[in-house]
Length: 519
Ligand SMILES: Cc1ncc(COP(=O)(O)O)c(C=O)c1O
Image 1 (cartoon, protein in one colour):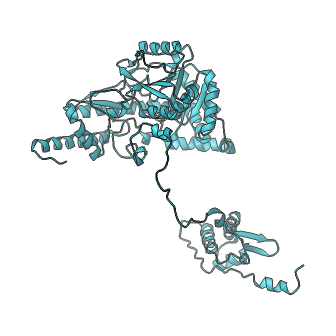
Image 2 (cartoon, helix red, strand yellow):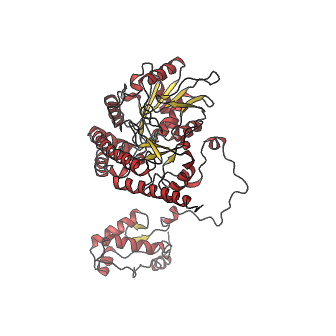
Image 3 (tube, rainbow, N blue to C red):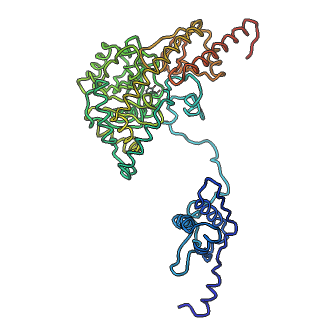
């Protein structure tokens, strides 16, 4: 029991904060309760009232003093309560909390930072990834895939993405499924999405599959990594196209796989092999539209690859990244659709159809592989965002997916024709275009091989950045060429960039002609 003497003393220590500093601006866009909340919070954060004995004036007093309504005061105080700045003592009033929330949020700043002395040991796995880029050269957002007109290959027109529709569907799925979309969810992927994708692939890619064969993944790279980890042991052999999609090479190396590059001819991957070449466990191909050369794999080659895989107990990884954008006629059916022996692991991505930022893709796996793929996914990162998956499911089932593809196919066809015409007019004396039937990029072969280094330098100087074809080669020795993207830019932008390139090249030629050497 506290003795009688100490009680009045304790009461006296309860000073009432007057909050003289509060200035409310009735013309501001910030609501009054927000202003009040913010100013009281900042005052409390100053630390002057942190001994737990400071009491707040009653809401009536605060309201009268400031000439505002009590409900405005209550709103501000209830938020301060909820965040832990205030505590109530029944019968005594509202006090400043003993420990302010900042205490629990802000770790003590270390006084000094000690850098590791000497060299840091990096794993062989990281070192093995074949990539000579450093620093932010890895960063797609910081390099050519960011904003600006760069004519970088394979970039879709993200400014045509129907953001308003997407946001509406997202709000609707959140309203309907609520907290269910905030929990951990299936490693296989959203059931509605798997159903919608299976239906789409059967109807439009002539795939033969059911939703239980679908695993939703975070894009093509993850599809490759999961597939390689599921069917290959470290050190076993994967065949990949040469030249190839660089990420395929990097991802397979990350999976610890030994890579055998296979050349491309005018029918697709060449599967003939020398006696010393080891049998592959997996063959990575892009049959619809070989990246980067643009060849569509012939029917004959498709059956040959399937026969080879069956005969050697290998799997085929079919990267069907942009089959939707074919400009000369109907697409050939997917390899998966003509596979009668469960050898094809088919994978697609929304990176080209919609946008790469969503990081969503799908695997159609032969049934015996599904559980192992899912097991590895669960050990990797569990699953993709349930909110995005549910939104995509609605986007597909409500017809927006198909109508977006149709619209984009038309836009890309126009841009492609425009690019070809402008390119031939402006740069036809230096390059020969190899126009593919599909896809978002075009290879331009140099007419004079000796121009290569100069063109490479100039493109990088002026910010028009087609990739050198050699960048995609492993062992292949191809004539010099550049791979241009055309899809992400309007005709005006395409014309501007090509004009810029053409005049930079002709200025350079004039300089050389007049003996002026700029570098
Ligand atoms: C051959 C190929 N596959 C797949 C992709 C897309 O992969 P992701 O789904 O990981 O964005 C690209 C992107 O340029 C590509 O060129």
